[in-house]
Length: 612
Image 1 (tube, rainbow, N blue to C red):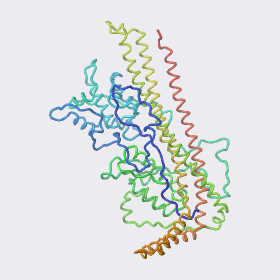
Image 2: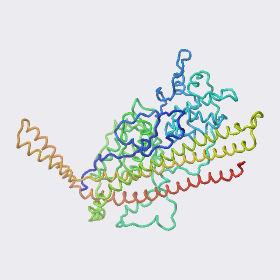
Image 3: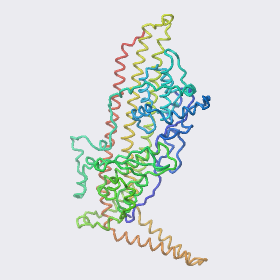
Image 4: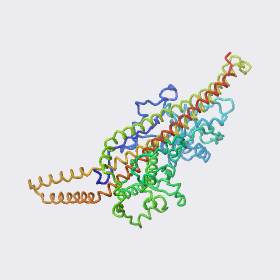
């Protein structure tokens, strides 16, 4: 049952990533409508990032070189000096001033091409503009109500609108609209903004090393022994998570040609080589080499390609490539592979591949088992593998559900954070407008003490909602980079073992089917039957040769399967599960305490807010 190399196919994996809607809503519609994505609607993962279907059209794909007119949600503008004002605005957004790019980089968006509402609010609050103007800039003109972030183009539009509002006469009510911005694009000044200090971090997104690095346990649960038949190899893998090699995979913005996307790769334990750039096809080459060299080892699959990928898919694929390479470099056998080392360290990788012929000889041809290794293979290995094979589909299906549900939770968290930012914006507006509504403001122009103090209290409430939005943003980032990636890493482990299982009986069945077809062809003797019969005989000989070759390596293959089951799979299944959920529990507790602290502080400060 385990003598044939693992198959490279398998049923498609659903990993429904949250993709927010980017359609522009009516500026005068209900501000609460569609602010929370519908779990049964398209906002919760109806797009499968691993499928081969084309990506849906989304206008929030980041572009640094050019911009299509449809990428910017602007309405037709009048002609100014023979050139449409819209073209002038498009030119500003496609080639923004250095200050615009600097502010975008300083915000450090967690999603490429996206800036969260809370980050934009924090930046625009330094403009000294009234809150009602900021609210118009952020909500009315730029985002639909079901969005939790601004695209790169929308962010630049917001900066231009702020600059226009700052250039208006003091005390006037500027017309904050795209039409007005387009008309005044030629005399637009730079916005006067400064980066507001970010609130102290109370919850840091865990790195991969931190996720699997446990705190000391006093009750001895971490050092509990499990049966390993006295294997030294099993003992050597204890505490493997403390010495993990971490390889970072980053997306290089500049493309090589029209379609070739490159990735920057850097290992923390091969720092002497520095970072190198690789294409997706280089990852395919690496996996092909490893599959041929180690057909009976746990090897992860690669995320697929897609024609016309959007920003969301590219980010999903980048994370998939990161999980792939980190699983390979931390496998006890493949981490020492020469091709892998060259892949991680060779600066001129394409030239190296052209001048070097890489051997893909299977490891069984060069590795020999000693007597102890042969004796260490349990007699009931078939039963052990059969037990895992029977239960693996159910576990894998559950982890696929975990990933889907975690991404839905992330969507709800992002929506709640965006709504908190909207509440903060509206509260600041009300805080400024309430004193002006006081009847005592006429004719003196000064509101009464009651209205003024209530307005200041509302401003305090708005600040608290802003901090809640910040905490929600940090919590979402931690979930995206920590919990969801940990679940996907665990899922990839089960997927790797599913692919490792291949049945010789399937190959035998193919030979038997071909043999029956050969006999039918010979008996009917239709025109050209001799050529068809020769093809079938040749194919059957190849398959029979494969079966014989596999059976001759039976002992080595059994040793590999036992090692992967007892050493690699068993240790990683336990450690990743326990430490991953432990990190999630710690992070959720800290995040909840931070939010509770915000409301407790607000409650104390509101005790001085007047009632009458």
